[in-house]
Length: 111
Image (cartoon, rainbow, N blue to C red; front, side, top):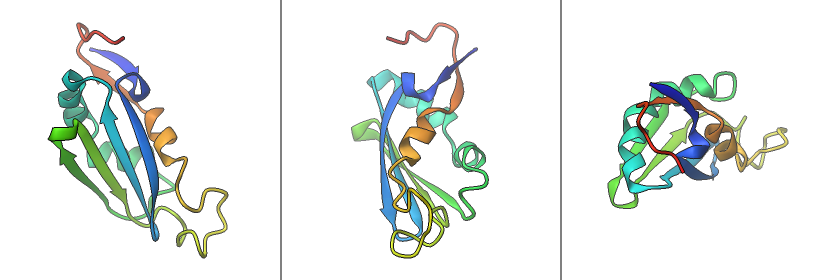
């Protein structure tokens, strides 16, 4: 196994749903989707956002899009209308997720 930054395998978008951060993670290649499903679990995402996400993390699979969608509850300090954070709507949460290091099989070809 080798470690790679999630950015090499996926791109992402994020936004807010009240006090929840909504992050879409899309595989750069269809063959990367299985790796994302196996390695980017709710527990991994919760640990990655320790200190920011105080609630549950939910994951939804979108196999036809080769994508995963994560909802991080209690992650925006109340949400856009009440939060004093610089990123009250969670727009940078996708970039933060893409910094995650995950293990992939040694023979995985990454372009």
